[in-house]
Each structure stands twice: as C-alpha cells, then as structure tokens.
Image (cartoon, rainbow, N blue to C red; front, side):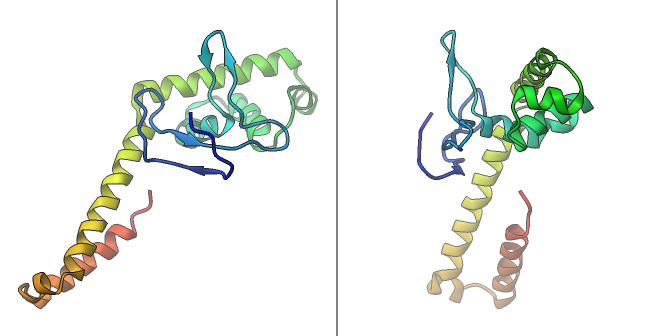
Length: 162
C-alpha cells in the first residue's frame, strides 16, 4: 500500500480485494500503520473506518460500541474493557469479529469498490461536459435551450452526494 505523509483517501487505484487503495499516515497512538502478521497484511485503521462507514449498521450494538471506542476515540483495549465492564479479552474478541465481519461484507457486497467506480464515472462525465461547454465552436452550433439543459444537468450531477 502506498505511504504518504498527508492523510487522504485516493480512489485512483481500485484494488480487487478491498475496493480502493487508501493513502494514510500515522497518528500519535500508532493507529493507522500497517501490520503484517503471518504473511498477511492487516488493514489500517483508516481502512476499517471506511468499512465501518459503509457496513457499520450491520454490526451488533456491542460491536459498534467497541469499534467506535477503539477506532474513533482511540481508547486501548484495557480502557474500553474498564469503561463498558467486560474483560480485555472480550473486547479483543469483539473487535476482531467486527473487523472480520466488515471485511466479509465488503468481500461479498463490494460497495466500496462500486462507490469508487461510480465516483470516477461522475468525474469523467463532468470533465466531458466541461469540455463541451468550453468549446465555443461546438456550443455555437447547439440550440441555446440545449446548452441551458446541459448546464442544469451538470449542476444536478455536482449536487449528487457520494
């Protein structure tokens, strides 16, 4: 996975397993770094957060609670265990199951990949519409109402929340 200093999501590269390549950095607690265990590269916290954005509602309420405290509040497993009154091992197991469930949902549904492709296609449509509307010779030969309609469609496309 590419490593960069600044934090942002890159949809330029579509990966067949995860859906998108995320470009991430590290935060103070060490969250955000890649780890390799048994030859398999684990997902970064930012990747799990993206999975959670898409599939979080499919997790149990306990999984959502533990996931949120760990990834969003940056609490340790021991702090989470103390806060919600369960053992550290139970927190570890719950978090691991939540992460596996999120990975399974993406593997089967591929919503993140589809979202990235959809966003890229919208950008391409907008780019082509801009090229048409900026070309004076092409616009001169088009009915003025059609030009207005193209501008309205462009505005509608920009208004789509992705």
